[in-house]
Structures are given as structure tokens and as C-alpha cells.
Length: 338
Image (cartoon, rainbow, N blue to C red; front, side, top):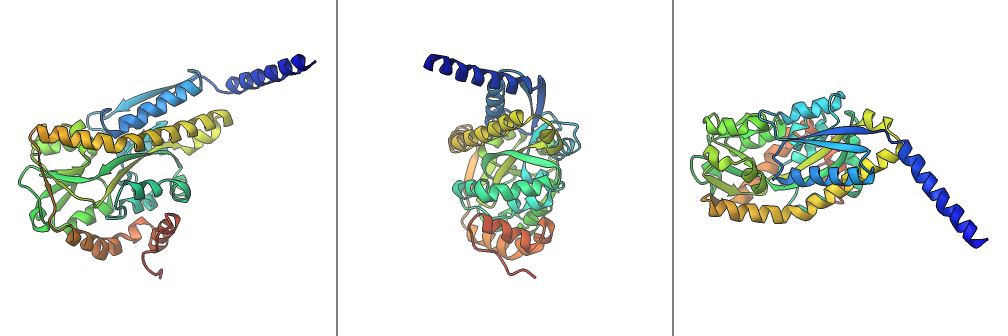
């Protein structure tokens, strides 16, 4: 009698699993990623694909499209928003035009280290950020941890604030990023990420800002970038987003698989981020890149907090949005609300 009960229990589990998979329709999901596969986005893209295809037993296939020439991350995010693309990974500044409240993550000197960035994209903070994305019809599935934005250029080393003055720096389509570089004394120019190499190569701009791993993956040394300066004004967070309407229309079973795949991809990104940055830095130095550190970074930070934050607060939703996010990160509020 006991064996009969066990047989019935196992049969019930197998039948339940069969019904669950029967509710998942065969499909291919397309994901565009703004960087080459060798950058941090490759970790997220490949981990997401691996997990979801394995969890769905191959019923769902994931097609990854990396760094197409001229690709505009803002346009890819827009395609996801209107349902012409399933998913995309790109930088927060390129998502700001669609989800301005997410621009809070572009505030200079918001994070001091990767640990703060992790706290700012998990738990209560992650829930709040996703609520901002949902207002624009998008759902955040994972965060890509890509290190701090270093500044590179083709003219001369930057070791103090005066060295960046009048340099033409490529920035994303972001009110916050434009304001940052204006206040630093540079001449910022909005250029699509996919066009940055050509802009550097043809001397339309003098420099750009990205992590070591991205710099190496994009082969910016070949575009004349000889000098790089380490600074810590902006930690690069690049979300994987999906169209919320599409997500809400798939079965609960597939929804869980997609969410779990995103969590797994984010964990893998966090695990690999420091290793990739260290390796890329060593390889770039060996290849002849001149790397400098700032002698006056407190002056850059003072400009960011005293000038940039007040000037761009309204662009990211106001003091209430900034304070709500800081509270979600268990940090003190920034300023009294009007």
C-alpha cells in the first residue's frame, strides 16, 4: 500500500511538471546588448540564455545580438518599450529618456564602491527601481555590474580638474551626464554608443568614459585613445529589461523561469565584475595604455554634489525621487523637499 502511495505521488509530480511545460509555448526571445560579448554584458547575456534554455528544456531559445555597428542603446530600449523587441541590455543614461526616474543612478558620486552599487540594486532599492521602469512599460530582470566610468582621451593625461577643460568628451543621451561634464569644464557631446569608436577614430571627439573591460572590448586604443584616468564619479549599471506587456501575457511558469534567469545572470555579473576589470587593466597597461589617477578627486566630488545634483534633480524626478531611493538603500536623505 505504501509503494502504491509513493507511485501515485511521483506520478502526480510528473503530471504536474508535464502540464507546466505544456503551458510554455515554443518561442525565441531576442536580446540586444550594446557591448561586445567580451565585456560584462556578455556575462549577463550568456548566463541568462544558459539558465532559461536549460530551465525550459529548450522550449524557449534565446538569441543574443551583441554590439552591432552603429547600434543606439536608447533606440533598442525604445523598441522593447513599444513591443518591437523582446529584451535589451544597455546603460542607464540611455534609458533615462524613457524612464527619467532611473536617472537617479547616474547621479555623480552616488556610489563609492561596488558594494554600495550592489545594495542599490537589490532588496528594497531593486523593487523601487523596478517600479520606476514599470511606469514606462518595462521590467528590470537583471543588473549588469560594469565598474566605474574611467575617462580616456587622445590628447594628454588627466591628473587634475584643469586637465579636462575644453576636451570634447563623448557622453550618452543623458541630461545628467551632459551636466556633469559641463561642470567639470569639458565639452560633452552626445553620441550613440555604437558610433563612439568612429567618433574617436575620426577625431569628432577627444575622449569618452567607460570601464576597463568595456574599453578593451571596444578596442578604443585602436581608435587613438592613449590616456586613461581612474576616477569614481559614476558606477556603470546596465539593466536587462523586458517589455512588461509581453511578460504579463506569458504563463506564470515561464514568468518564473525568466525572473530566475535574470537573478542568476545578475549574480554571475557581480561575481565576475572585479576579475574582469583587473584583467582588462593589466592587459591594457601591457599594451601601452597610459593610466593616471587624480590628485584632486575631492574637488571633482565637490562639484558633483554642490552643483550637479541641484541642477539635475528635477530631471530625475525631483528631490522626492532621490530621497526615496536613498532611503531604500538605507542611506541618509539628500536634501529637504520643497
